[in-house]
Length: 320
Ligand SMILES: [Zn+2]
Image 1 (cartoon, rainbow, N blue to C red):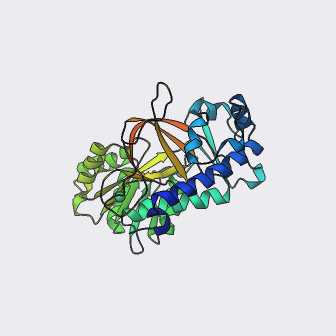
Image 2: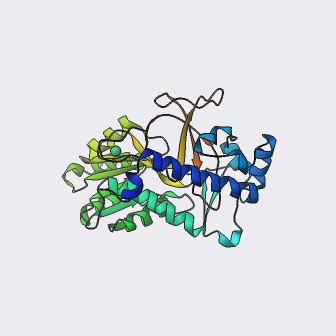
Image 3: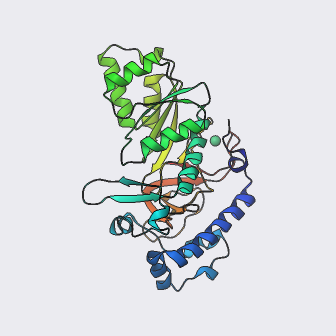
C-alpha cells in the first residue's frame, strides 16, 4: 500500500525538478532570514543566484551537530517564535540540540512518517502500540499522530514498564508495535521471564525506530515477535523518526526525497561519492520552514540506490 502515490512513485526527472525548485526557494529564504547561513554562504561568495538546480548542492557548506549545539536553542530559527508551534530537544547533558517546527513542518513530518507506517501495513482496523518517549524527544508524539493519520487505533503506551506493555499487547489485540530496539528487546526478555508466548500474539509488524538501522538486529527482533520488521530511520537533530523507512520488498530504506535530499560523501575530504559507493550520509532538509538545515553530516555510513524498488516505489533507497 502507498500513502502518497504521487510522491512515492514519482519518476526521477520529476523528482529532480521538484528538489531543485525546493532548494532554490530554501536558499533564497536562508539568504534572507538566517544569519548563520548568510555568514557561511558569504564566506564562499555564494548567493541565491549561484544555484540553478539540485546538482549545485555540492557548492554549499556542510552543517555539523556542533553547529546545531552552538546555536541552541533559537539561533537557527528562520521564522519568528510566534510562528513556532512546537520544540523538541534531543541529546542529553551539555550538548542538547533544539528542533523547532511550524505547524506546516509538523504536518509535513507526520505525512512523511505515515508513508513508512503504511508501507508496513498499518491501516484502519490495525491497533498500534507506541513505546516511546512522549516528552521532549520527538519519537512519541511524531509516531502517535502519524499513526492516527493512517486510520489505525493508537495505544500511547509511552515508557511504561515491560510488564504493563505486555498486558496491553495481549488485552487489546495489538497488531503493530513501534519502539526503539532496546525497548523491543527488553519486552522480549520480560516475556521470556513471565513465560508469555510473544509469537502467539497477533502482532504482524514491528516498527523499529532507530538512528542506527541494523539489519541483523531488526531480523532478531522480528523473530522474537514472529512479525515483519520495518526500520524507521530517525534523525532527531533534523526532524525525528521517518526520514527514511523500510518497505515490503525489504531492499533498503526509502528516503523521503521530497523533504530530505541525500548525498553520500567521502568523510575525509567532503567530496560527493558516486551512487552505489559507501560513505557518510549527508541530508538537506528541503521543505523545513522553522529550522532548515543544509548538508547535515549524519556521521552514518550508507550506500544510496536510486533504482526503482520491487515494491513499486521510486524513492531512493539507503542501505546502512
Ligand atoms: Zn521498496
